[in-house]
Image (cartoon, rainbow, N blue to C red; front, side):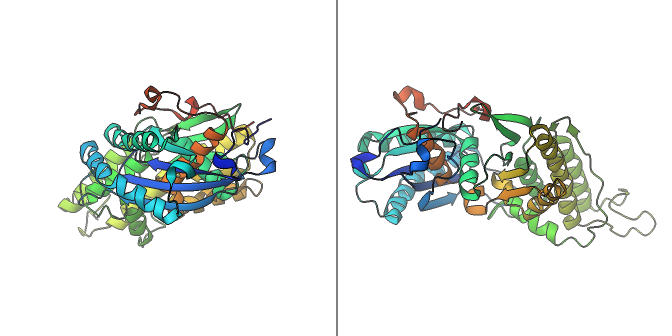
Length: 386
């Protein structure tokens, strides 16, 4: 049996407060989360029902010009410039005047992610911990997404589809681990969409994937998909070849290469395919691959629920396709959150970190706070679940 009330809150309060810091990529997030003490947490698997109250959830994104990605060095500089300001804003928004006495734990992203940005944020976490005398907890970024999704949607034991700029994984829980059933063999889906957005030179604000989604919605030939490679390999998938192929199509389109039979009518020279058509076809192709491997995982573990987490999980079309698959499988359910929680944020780190803290898992030496770019989801021992 799991007892989440083993560690008592500070000052004999009836609630816990956690400060979460996220900065694994180009988004810097700071969040403050409150967990009340619940009798139901003294036994059983109720970690998905914490009645969490979000006191603040602030985010600032490093945006680059159209056609450019974000470099680790520049992203780290952005995080260093904004981290202290965001922490102050979060504390003020949460109404916390004395973090030394009010905050139970400071949670930070330990990995995976980009090395330099991770390092910038963990320095801030260490500094606050030493100044305030507050415990530290290092959190796996992927587990943060999962636990926030479970709390918001109240999904009990779903198959998890984790889709973001750096990760693409199909996950199911078993014996205190989030087991990876399938994943990308090369690039993540968010990275695939972002790189195609760079080829198209569309804006990076609010995010490249969102702008591709909007272009796809404007497609007028949805019944005539541009044929793209479809590379599902068992439970895994590959997207680098798809990206290379559609990049070549986009470049021929911009150059007006009328020798390309896919893009131009060979008799009249008339353009047959638009940028919107390419965006729509890319989305449909990639999402169909994701739905296929997710359904296979559901069949394997006999699950009826899917939880979509990660930045790409905001995509409405992906949610629709997954929802149709779940409906066809004995009226299953798909759970997803909006951009406040799908996109990287500090609250998700606070949620997972607070669960770890309540099970007694805290940093005992600053050597344990070294961040890492490689930190797989299944490396984490999930002590807060049965």
